[in-house]
Every structure is written in structure tokens, then in C-alpha cells.
Length: 132
Image (cartoon, rainbow, N blue to C red; front, side, top):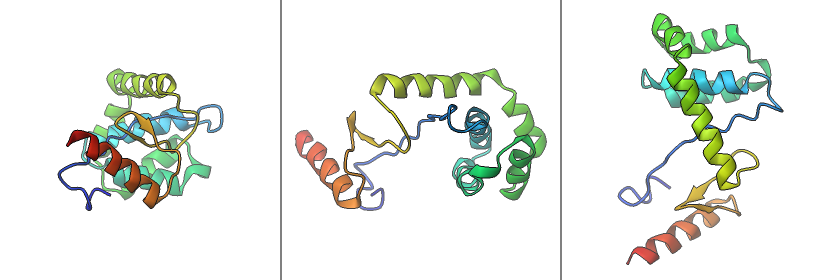
């Protein structure tokens, strides 16, 4: 969608760690924000999802090394309370927006009910038409 609407669509990622389901969800979200500090959010994110059944502190280090993070900086950033607060704000925003699970996609505040490319395109086109 970003390629199809390069000047009209902006992707914003918000964390919504499912802590009741995944023991390390909050730690994973903070670790991904630490990876973001080094410009490697998506690479780290993708590795987290490939390994979601095996997450623990050691695995975070392994994945960080695999994507080429500066480990000293990564571990320092993981302890940064500002990153944990950012994840908490994202979680609070999600609850207030009615998020019940992941992934949840919003377009201009509208929850995408039909998670298909045609459904995504339709809601984007509707929102763009409102701007004209």
C-alpha cells in the first residue's frame, strides 16, 4: 500500500504487547524500540515474529546480534525507562481505540474490519475521497 500511495499514506506502528498470552511480549516490545534506536526496528521485529515461541532475554541478544546491532547500545537502550514508557503509552492508546488483538490496522482512526488488500485499498480510497 505504501508503494501504491507514496504521497498519501504514512505507516505508524504502535506496540500492543499481548502480555496475557506471551510472557515476554512487553520485553520484546521494549527490545524492538531499542533496536529502533539504531534504525533496525523492522529487521528486529521480523526476527521476533519468526521466533515468537522461543523468546527470552538470551534470544533477544541473539536476534540483536543477527541483525547487526551494537550490543552495548542495545542493552543500554533496553534499560531506558523512556522506551518502556513509550510502549506503555502505545498500549494505553490501543486500549482506548478499542484494540482487542494484533494485528489491528487503523486508517484515519477507522479500524480496518476486512484485513485484505482490497479491503485496505477501499478504506484508503474512502478516506482520500473525503480530503477532496
